Length: 540
Ligand SMILES: Cc1ncc(C[n+]2csc(CCOP(=O)(O)OP(=O)(O)O)c2C)c(N)n1
Ligand SMILES: [Mg+2]
Image: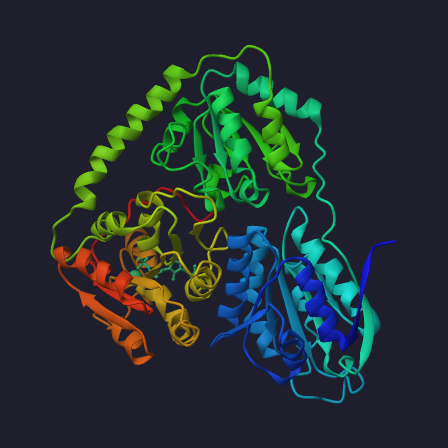
């Protein structure tokens, strides 16, 4: 028998009690009568209600809360359009393996079919993009249902869950909420781990490529131990960034392209073998895969794979005893290439051009960014540069949208970042196109007193589409935005601050004013629309 807490009130009280078991202390939302019982139950608890101007922002904020805390992130979305507005963020959470919990309102069950306001069966729409989508039907077991759903979201392989609550469920009720969050399964296949360790130890030029699921499993320490013990250079993507500090001797940012030509073993850890990692092919190198659950074994390519708790698997690698090949020359080769790249980027970061090159913005940002700053990326080419030039030093500080690639996550992610880390710098890097999806949620930043610094790379185009269209067709359509738009004035109108920058030497002082302002502040940098990002990957 599980220990239980007995909760009286209505199903909302049981829901809130269940969320507290998992350390949830914020719910992201936008008002609608169907979800008032959650607000009612959260009153007077540690749970903070953070309301937004679009359910997309609320759901993205909840996903980012999960990314930042490694606890479940919760959004409460009202029936019908509230839920459907959250769908891109739910799908993003599925692609990112983020434990997102969406509590939906729902038209009353007793009148179902008669045409109540917003009467829509969300469940079949949410089912393909969640680990669980269901309607809560019994008020006396609501707490247990919520508890089990949240635990499911938080268990490997993590992902979103959805529950909706018919309005007429919320009558007086009582029910039990289980204690605790469920034990973490750290068991691993020691033989498989030992075989992997032997592969790494006997390789001449091995590398680790580390992604989000390693972060979700809290594997930073054991990754460091495994890499140092076996002498393996590490590359990162997604939430893997920062799992070794950028300047760790085994951390590499700029030389991933070399793996194809030079590595003889690439161990991809905690990220799918998708388009971001060449679909799991690195020239002639042997590829091995470490995944957090059997469901993550690649279907399109057969490589040696170890599934289980990634922190435990890496601890197994760190504990490997026996001889290993000396990788000193290999690490030195990569370091020399990395340093050569570093030298070539220096002039780009200092580019003194008119109009401004986006790289200069990163040169200036690097000078003012704290090591523990949270960096949010939302855009096309402008944020691709961030991936190249922003150095990440701590796990859980780099928030990009992930492989679903949904523009519009920026403001939701920013709301969560500052809610979770009120004392840290939060910087939101926005393409001008991306900014349009969510800028109205500056209102939420202002109302909730969440000062963040937004930087718009304002090239007046959907650059990541325009340049490739030009390259492929020789013409483009639907690629232009209004040039010279004053996104800073939008933020000022909403109660924040901002300024427009047109000269490279104005960027640094503007960023300093932004961080000092204590309000949501947008630095609108007019950048060169002719600047073409040196892109090598493709969509397919
Ligand atoms: C929701 C959504 N719609 C469309 C796209 C396709 N898309 C990817 S990048 C991009 C251009 C982004 O432009 P901007 O934010 O201005 O950044 P830039 O490339 O100009 O630096 C577009 C339209 C997408 N990824 N997500
Ligand atoms: Mg643009």
